[in-house]
Structure formats: C-alpha cells, structure tokens
Amino acid sequence: MSAYTAQMSSRDGRWVLYVALMGGGVSQWPDHDFGPGNVPTPAERSRALTRLGFVLTGGAEWEWTEYPERPDDDTSPVRLLASVQVCSRDGGLS
Image (cartoon, rainbow, N blue to C red; front, side, top):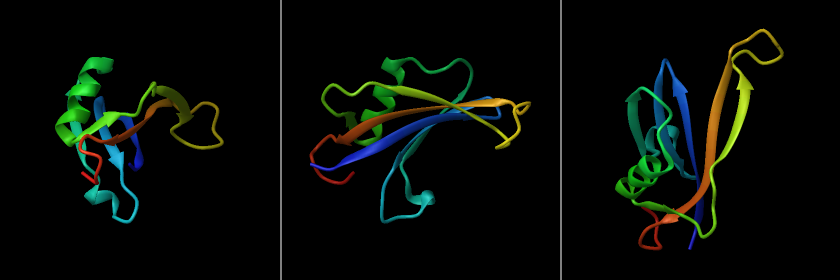
C-alpha cells in the first residue's frame, strides 16, 4: 500500500486540501475546496479525503507548519500549511 502526503493551505481566505501524487503534474492532484471561512475541522478534512478516495494512515495526525509568504522577509504575512500521511481507501492508487 502506497502512502501519499495530503496537504491543506489557505489562499485568499479559501482552504484547499489536496493529495500530492508523484508522477503527475499538480493539475492532476485530487483536491477539495472548502471555500472561505474557518479552518476546516479534522472531521471535515477526513470526509473530504474520503470523497477523494483516501484515508489517514494508521496513527497519522495533522502537522502544521508556518512559512512566510515572501521568503527571507520577517515582515511578510505568515501562511499555514497542514500535512498528513494518507493512503488510498482501496489500497490502490486513487
């Protein structure tokens, strides 16, 4: 069973979750747009992953990273990126 990385970030106030698949371009990555609003809850993220054909790997937890919008500029707005390990629901590539 292959493991993939799911990530969630916000741009222009919209939270988007996507699964990074190797061997294909970014335009081919499955994604879910939560729309504007608060950070999606873990349950909302899990439901979105399920709709995309993925589940969290055993014991996986979301990890949050902050990074500057403009690298090397400590006055730059901070962005948040959430990551978690997932696998296909059926054990194959989704």
